[in-house]
Image (tube, helix red, strand yellow):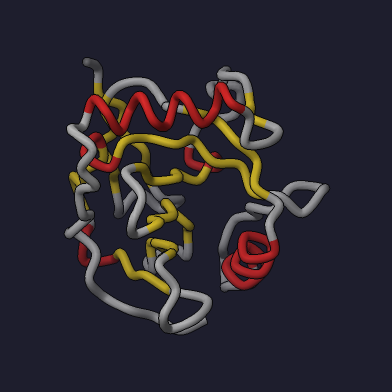
Length: 158
């Protein structure tokens, strides 16, 4: 399985991601819109909301993602204190890196991290049966476990 390295804007943070994405999706839910607006309003942050107000993600198994460099620059924020969803940002340049839905077995890596034109998978427009089957199959291959991403432990408020 080949690894790919994804970096924040300034290169201080590098994520290593194994294998192929489980799915490619645009999310336009209220939480992603709110969080996206907050994150892209930070100094020097990239634009993550598209013209329709959605955020593009590539979904990967949590156990396929690792921080190779710059974990000290990573911080998490939650829209609500008790939210199971945390969004991980490289604070060195305010680049959103990925979304971690705590109970889930996948992480949603922000599509902006890939060079333009390199994401070629078909985007899910909704939670179709095929999309859900892919997630379930990936979870089955993980022994129905949901690993924790432990290389981020710092909190920030936005």
